[in-house]
Length: 133
Image 1 (cartoon, rainbow, N blue to C red):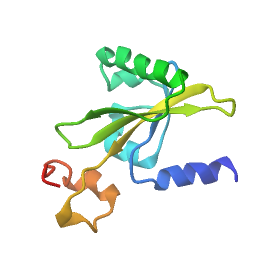
Image 2: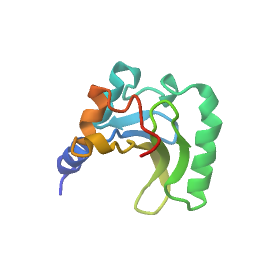
Image 3: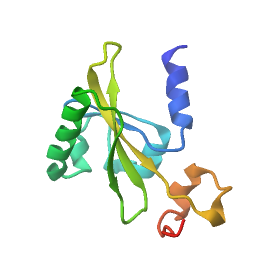
Image 4: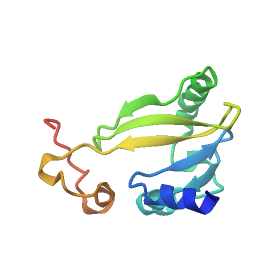
């Protein structure tokens, strides 16, 4: 398969993907990320334009753990959105960590179980997660 097929697959993915290299430069964003973040995150700029510099030690610690062999790592439960957030290292063919992205899980809402995940970004369904779910 060629690169455009992989880009199209990632663009179809309903969760945001913002891929950063080891220097914390945003290298690529899928369609969902562009829709969710708008101009707050831009390819070619530091991820710290949207994350404050205080998160840099946390990201560096995740990178060190990834270099030691860990794969996806739990970061936090976002209290304002109800999302679980994970740090996901990306490796080259030799296994070296070349970058990372953050994976978010949208909280499940029983009343909207048939709603596509991508619609959560625009209709406010994520704004008030029900902790009972």
